[in-house]
Image (cartoon, rainbow, N blue to C red; front, side):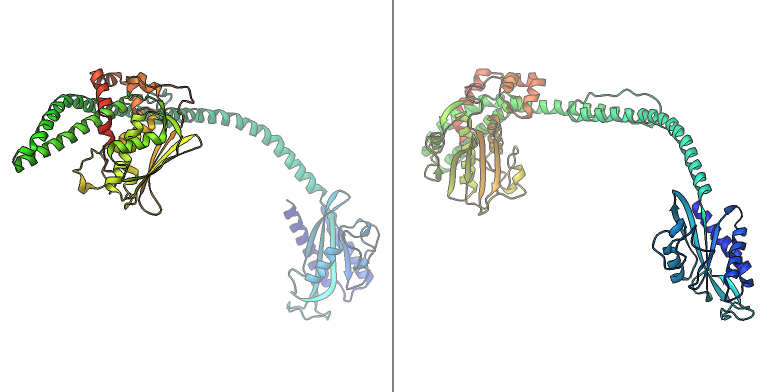
Length: 537
């Protein structure tokens, strides 16, 4: 609105000067300038502007700016004295740029528009070289340097009171109409947003419940829109996930039960075969060489098979959450040296074991863990093998390091997987592929961790960390069977503890022949301790 007003005012002032300029004599006298100003004021019409004229450095006509003050062009800055809207800055800009200039100023709290317009000489054909001669015309400058400057500058000022009132009325009307309209629009928008966001929020909460394991989560379907279709799809997805999870659990339980049942069924014939092979081993020296070799081969393979069966039974206990943990306060150095002496490794392993360090753990299970790690280092690593132990921050740390080629980086994430062997070319070996997996489960049973890494200087390093006192000195002996035993030992059997709770039949199946299973656990400790796991290239 203001831009339209100022453009119209500049255009009107130019039209008036184009009409009155040709009749103005040059150089103009004061009376001529007075007459020009009077005619321009009359032509202002409803705009009611007030005009001024100044020729070169002469006085301003009519009289001082506004209602009095300095009439020279070199007055003080800001608005001219007496309250005129034509400022010194406007007059300076018109003289320097030689083009129409306008400026909005505030005078006595009211907006004013001031215009300055220079007048040029143009001859009859508009070439701008009349210089006041007969036939020359004085016209306002539409752009800088269109004609020869005449030295005459015309100023006009008028109040923008009407425009301000119009703008205020427009703003007031907009506020009066917009606020109720906005309020009326916000209320339905909130209801619509609530209607849309509520199902989305329910979908998010349901997805979070499914993520946490509640696969039986379902959502009610309301309406026939896209959100209803999405809810139907979500329910179908949840139903499929629940079905697949149940099927996987059933297959996993069957697989564990099968392994446990087969292992138990094989124990009796293997026990008989072992007894027979022991007798044959004693008489092998009296047999012919070929028969003796066959007897020794059968004896070795029978021993391997018996060891694998014992490992499978142990794994089944872990899966069922039925593994026993008998804690006792033990001298760490003495326990680890005993592990080496039982296998005849004391001369092959360097040790750094602190004297007087005691910790609470299950000596049989720690024996199995250390025996597997040291046996792997001796079989697949390079000498010397070094066994160290120390306590830090309330935890017992046991390191087994060798000087071999290390473990293939691609095999590192899998060395504790069941039946994993890093070198496929050695798939036929003395190890069952379960030794490191059993070691990991034994460490977890103590609430600890087992890690494998390559040392910076070469070789592999296996690190066992278990709490020095897992139960805070309470003296708990965690033992039991089935789901009850798993509940008393945090972390026992990993995921198997969950399955023991939901599938108690399996735990019961593992513990059939209870006395026999427990006997095998204690009698086979040394055999499992000597197990060497193929865990590196």
